[in-house]
Length: 170
Image 1 (tube, one colour):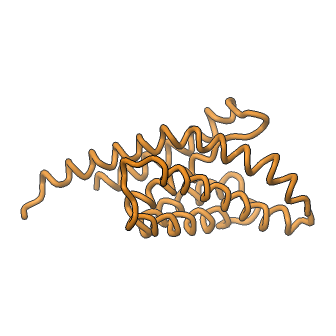
Image 2 (tube, helix red, strand yellow; image 1 turned 90 degrees about the horizontal axis):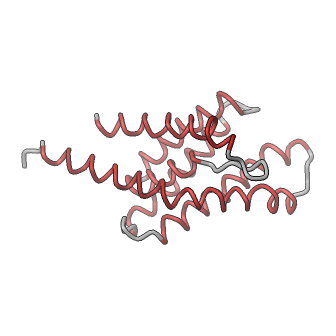
Image 3 (cartoon, one colour; image 1 turned 180 degrees about the vertical axis):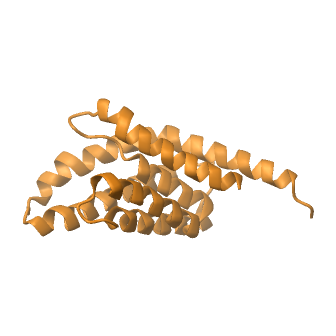
């Protein structure tokens, strides 16, 4: 139950931060993608299923406000959560290198998926421009925040596991 409350809180907090606070802190019109950070972090820490579920609900919130096609962001983020869940087997939570690399790759894949299904389908063929002006700057901004947010998500996850293990009867 605590984990569910944590997931709901992190998704809602990321939503309000991304749509409220970081729209005012945009650098060159670019805002960080907090949903990718949350989805990839939960996927790496807890596995494929939970990463997929968190990604799906993050995507539903994005679809409700920004989507041209309802379900697009839910699908993309659910797939990213599932893929990042594969890292759980080789993942060491205290090492920051692998999570930052995975979050960066996830954000680049997210940007490419958005380009392919949103811009390419409307006939906008200038991928190098989109890569240089949107995907790479967004990834850098996301990675700067990921250093802090990943640690916060990881610390909260450890606290939930410790509290949950106190109530167990082995």
